[in-house]
Structures are given as structure tokens and as C-alpha cells.
Length: 331
Figure 1 (cartoon, rainbow, N blue to C red):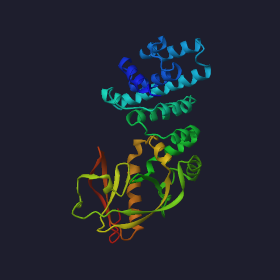
Figure 2: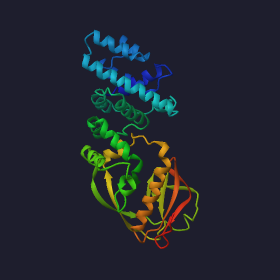
Figure 3: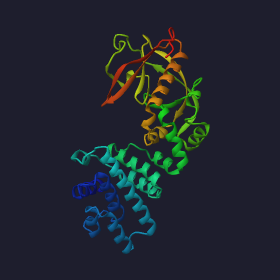
Figure 4: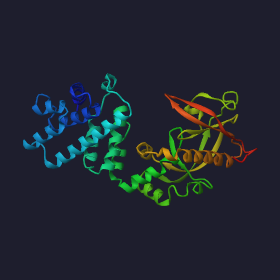
């Protein structure tokens, strides 16, 4: 629908300042869908004033909105308001830059058809998180991801939350370590039932061994206890604030037994929240994982660091550990 982004702009400029662009998107969708894009109608003035529910009630009275559509619209409005709160907490201000982004009506139509049926508070929180990310980066979530989340129940989303702190990342791939001793590290964290559930949902593949070509890093580039900026391509593996960097002088193949996340799994894993109370435990798990991976690949030498994303580069801290398999020190 070509006029959708024009309607978005009009509503954003007129809406009360307390409401972010997310409520504007919800109002624009309702205008495009149920007012047929007619911005001269009285109901549109209510939407511009931030009184979306009043506009919906008027459409029901006029017979232009069924009760089923009303429920779906009100669920959408509730999700948008939750997203507004998250957007504000994230210290994202309403600026003209956000108005330059173009949004796809078809995506919001698909979102409405799925999220509009969600009335559970906890599940609405997940859909609100999707909206926040969609405002920041239109197209962040695929249609397949929306459909997958729609079919997931509360227990399955909880399983995704359970595995989130243990997901390793390598150049766009995400996976769980499944090497010798890997599950022993995870006793009491997640179990086989979580894996089965997430496999059934399409979040993870079956256990698939994966081989990685690791790019060589010359020793002079990253000396011991180096602190500074590096690119994401210099990192072999990353888990939260912990990363490992290879120090081999030639390209080599590193074998890492894994349970791999699907592309949809990588998208939806963004929604899972990590409990910061256990941050130190997660970091210790990352260090153990990287050490075990290095030990199972005799020619691999790694340094393990803290890391922090800064724009497109990563700030790394001093070595936490050097793992070289020749001198495998106890730590």
C-alpha cells in the first residue's frame, strides 16, 4: 500500500510527544486497513490525537469493524504501547531520523494477522520486542519468524530463554557447543527436553558437526594483553561479553561439534532475555567452552578476552587466558 508511509508520517507529527513512533505505526496500519487510507475522516483525527481505542469503538458502531477485528486491533494497540515503553526505557528519542525509515505495509499486515490473536501478557511482551526492533531496523524479522513465534507456546519460548545465555556465535552462525563434556557443563541449565521442543519448533537443527575455516591472525597484530579495537572478522567465537581469538600463523580447519540454530532461531533468540544475576556464571561457561574447543584441536592456539561492541568494531580487554595445547595450564 503506497500511502502507508505517508500516513505514518502524518500521525507521528500529530501524536502527543509522550508516544513514540511505534504507536504511530499501529495507528497508521489501522488507518490504512480499516479507513482505507482516508485521512479526512473523523476517526483519523482521533487516531492522530492518540485516541486509537475511541476510533476503533466508532468503527464498530458504524459496522465497519467486526468484533473479531476489534479484539485483534486492541491486542495490536496493547502490544504497540508495550513497545513504546521498551522504546522509552532504551533511551530512544523521537527524532526526525526515525521518520526517514520506510516500513512495509505487507509486513504489518502479516504482523496484525499473527500478533492480533495474542492476548497473553507474557507473549505480548515478546511481540512488543519485535516491534521495537522493527522500528530500529525495518525487515529485522522475516515472515517465517513471525509465523514460527505465533505457533510457539509459553513452554517453548521458555526453552528458548533457557538456552539463550549459552549460544555461541561465529560469523553469522549461532549454535550450542556439543563436544565432549559440553553437556556436563550445562547440568541444571537446560536439558534434552528443551532441545527436542526447539527442534520441533524449527528453532534448531539436529546435532550437526560443523567445520570452520579460521582466518589466520599474525602475532604482531594481537600481542599478549592487547587492548583495543578489532573487527568482528578477527573473532573466532563469541558468547556475550567473552570472545576468543586465534593466533595461528596459517589458515586451519577447526572442528566444533554443535547443535546449530536455524536462521529463524537466530532471529527469535534476540527476543530472549538474559538474567544478569548469572552473568559471571555465563562468562565462566564461555571460558570453559573455548578452552575445551582448543584442547580438542591440537594445533589451535587461542586467547580469551572480554569484549564490548562499539559500532561495527569490538573493543577487547586484556587476556583472560591463553590456551595453546602445548602448555595447557590449570585455571
